[in-house]
Each structure stands twice: as structure tokens, then as C-alpha cells.
Image 1 (cartoon, helix red, strand yellow):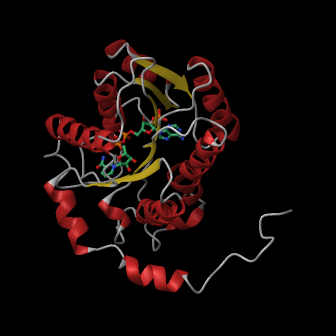
Image 2 (cartoon, helix red, strand yellow):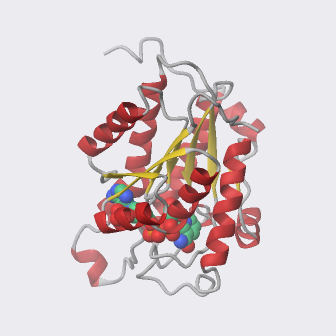
Image 3 (tube, protein in one colour):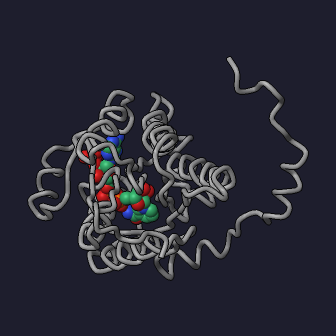
Length: 271
Ligand SMILES: NC(=O)c1ccc[n+]([C@@H]2O[C@H](COP(=O)([O-])OP(=O)(O)OC[C@H]3O[C@@H](n4cnc5c(N)ncnc54)[C@H](OP(=O)(O)O)[C@@H]3O)[C@@H](O)[C@H]2O)c1
């Protein structure tokens, strides 16, 4: 077990986009495991419905792309936990849009920025704020969980920006794990299969329809069990395992060898 429950105070997690879908299913499972779970999203009605369904959740109305909302969220959680830093940050919020770079609709306006901000820029900023708040706190075990997708590992034609942003998040996750190696913060990446949630409304995904509520619940269960155990790579379904197996991560020894030749210059961290 990575996370041991503590009788003094419950373990705490923030799940971005925890109002519906996989995020809500994970939030419920963590709450059932005795955690204090904060969820955030933009749609107030969904947050309200989530808390009505699972009153142990604490909803924070926030948009992860807003700097003010991100700061407010961490401050609000600190206020509610008596200043204890969060034990687990789960970057789960994401959107999917359809794109076609030969189609006038894609070419007429910037529809990429929002996807880049929600799926890539926001989780990176959330991680920075999370780590900054932990700097002077007691070094208790913690985890950063980035919810990725097997679609981060190859180009998805119908939703290229999703693939590209999740690919960026995947590479950031691999590198962050190297930065935080040996620290008390585990860096966890989750590769769910296609799930029949509201995420991919603009797409027609054949396998998604089959992966309804039972599969979503099973994926959430396996993911939460993996987080509690501190498993760094969670592939919670046969479909996800099959796709991931076709795109193995780079050989760590080769990555080490290349990195040995690129060092930070002295003074890089002074203004
Ligand atoms: N569904 C799949 O097939 C699938 C497959 C592989 C991986 N995943 C990954 O699993 C995660 C959850 O997906 P899901 O299928 O559960 O999606 P979902 O049902 O569409 O839920 C997405 C959640 O993110 C929130 N969100 C979106 N933009 C936000 C923003 N700017 N600020 C705050 N919250 C925001 C949504 O709430 P609001 O819109 O109200 O803000 C919602 O709570 C995602 O990271 C996704 O990439 C999903």
C-alpha cells in the first residue's frame, strides 16, 4: 500500500472534472475508501447532482483553465483541511473535439487553444501549484495522477488535438516522474479504454458503446485500487492494455544515456 489511512484525519484528493463520468466514479470510490474528496467542474448543475448522489464529496465550482480559479481551489481546499496539503491530485478534466485539417470548419478559426489549455496547460499548472504548496509541508506520501489515454501514443485521426494534447501530457508525466524520483510524490498515469461518457460527443466510437456503466465502474475501481497501491502505470482494461502494448515507452537506459549529455547550466534558476 502506498497510502495508509490515518486515524487523525482522512486522506484528501482533488479530482478535476469529478462531476460526471470516470472522474465521478473515481470520486465515489475514494470517498467509500474513507477519503475526503474534492471535485471541480464548470457546470454547477452536474456538481450539485454529484454531491446529491454522493454527499461525502465536496464540490468546488472552478474552470481549470482559469488561473484565478486554480489558485482559489487550492486555497479553498487548504482552508477546509486546516492547512494540510492535499495527498492526491488527480488531473482528470479533459475535452475532445473533432478536427480535420482539410475541412473549412477546422481551418476557419482557432479551436485548438481550448483543448490545449484544458488537456495540457491546466494539468501542468495544477501540478506546479500542488508541488509549490507541498514544499514546506510535512513530507507525507502523495501522488499526482494524470488521466491519460492510449490515444496519447498514436495519432487519432478524428480528434487529433486530443491525441496531441494527451501525448504532451504523457511526455510531461514521464519526465515529471524522473524529476520526482526518490521523493514522496508518486507520479501515476492512467490509460482508460474508450468509455461511454459525455466526453466524445463529436465522435462515433465503435467500442465506446460497449463500455457503459459497468465498465466505467470497473475501470474506476481498478484505477483507485492502483492509486492506493502507488502503481505508476495503470491500464485498467484489456482494450487499453492491448493498445498500450503496441506502443512501448522509450527504453529507460537509452533515455538516461541521452539525458547524461544535456545538463542545466549553473545559474539557470536565478532571474
Ligand atoms: N471516455 C473515454 O472514452 C476516455 C478514454 C480514455 C481516457 N479518458 C480520459 O478520462 C478522463 C475523464 O473522461 P470522461 O470520459 O469521464 O469525460 P466526461 O464524462 O466528459 O467528464 C469530463 C469532466 O471534465 C470536466 N471539465 C472539462 N473541462 C473542464 C474545465 N475547463 N474545468 C474544469 N472541469 C472541466 C467536465 O465538467 P464541465 O464540462 O462541467 O467542466 C467533466 O466533469 C479524461 O481525462 C479523458 O481524457 C476518457
